[in-house]
Length: 145
Image 1 (cartoon, helix red, strand yellow):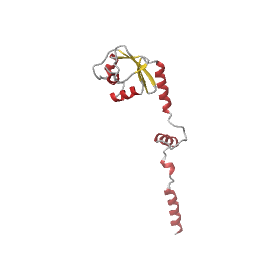
Image 2 (tube, helix red, strand yellow):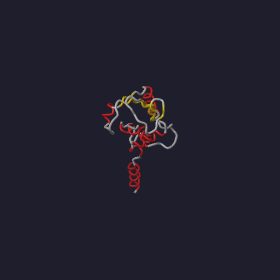
Image 3 (cartoon, helix red, strand yellow):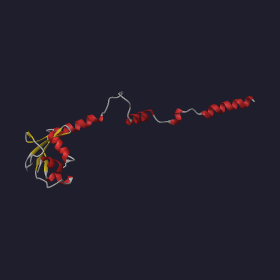
Image 4 (cartoon, helix red, strand yellow):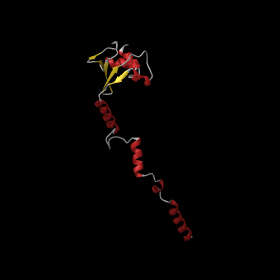
């Protein structure tokens, strides 16, 4: 089976054309050499794939006949990726959580909600009781008459 079709059939890439593009960009290799889309995959091959700044390594156990369900993928490949690569992925996700420095740019909706919660949404505290003002002035004007 061609490597682009193999990567698509084991659901590593969503479409076969995306797999082909990644291969053209030299992000996929078998052993130590970069491959072309037409390279045949054999059982026992170790494929290195660079995706999301992580170097994945998969070992081919079986060649599937066509694209399969996600539950059947472990029957055809074995993940032999280094644990350090997954730790790098965790670190990158954690650093993306902090998306901008405070005080830079316009506040996002989340920032605005956080500020509103901090300040408080007590609407009654923002208004003065106008009845007290009008009641006092009306009482005084009635007494004068």
